[in-house]
Length: 175
Image (cartoon, rainbow, N blue to C red; front, side):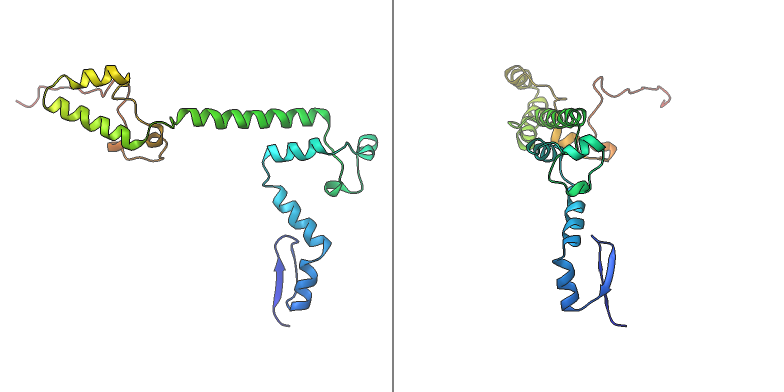
């Protein structure tokens, strides 16, 4: 019977030879199926831009159905759907800005580590440098860069202490 070629986009197979494969890959059905597949992964902003540049489909507005379906060059979105899409784009943009604000671009992990090391050496020499540095920068020991906190599944030894510190119970049973 020979080898068969299976096209994932079109969900069909055929005898694999150069002529059949070339004919299939250049066919309209394959191009439409491939476009439909990649359209599933488009972001909301690109979809909104495309839909806003298209004119409304008169046939779809009148009858609620269009012979061309997703291949129509006119927009099949209602005003309400466009409004919802705009809101999703705005929410996505706002979420992206919020996440960038949380990660302070001016602060790197190396800066934080060097400041932390200075504080530790100052504490070990019992100097007053810790208080001076904290007042200059206005930062506390618990001010850990977000780059470190966003790493999933850290072992307990690497997790930062809770805001109130660790609850340590001292027992006098050792005596």
